Image (cartoon, rainbow, N blue to C red; front, side, top):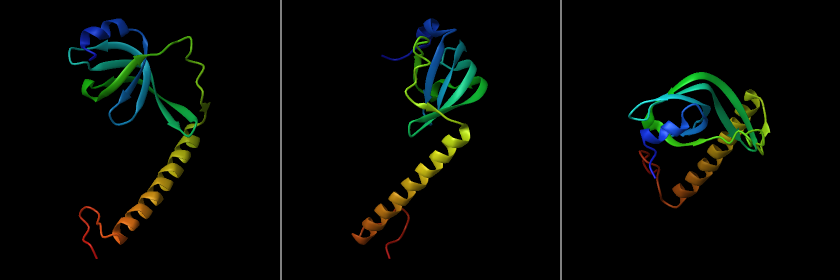
Length: 128
């Protein structure tokens, strides 16, 4: 089922989690919306997840363009404090994300090397 603007009436003044197309997750109170589902969130935090940890970055009032919303849902206030992840500092989560990204890049480099040996080439890169 599609979330239409009319369905947002029930979510007004409720705490929501919104997943954006760029991968970010926002948590905030829905205060206003319009006919194309642009949203205004109050007391917004951006939540980052990485390897069993999470952290919240305060963002305040946040305007989200409707076309960027991938998924949204109401947060159960009774279960909000039962997050099965460890809350960490922003620096800790950023450091872990950098390590994870570096490991992924190393893995990708090895994969590309193997493909080159088999005669495949990267996009835009001539075969040597």
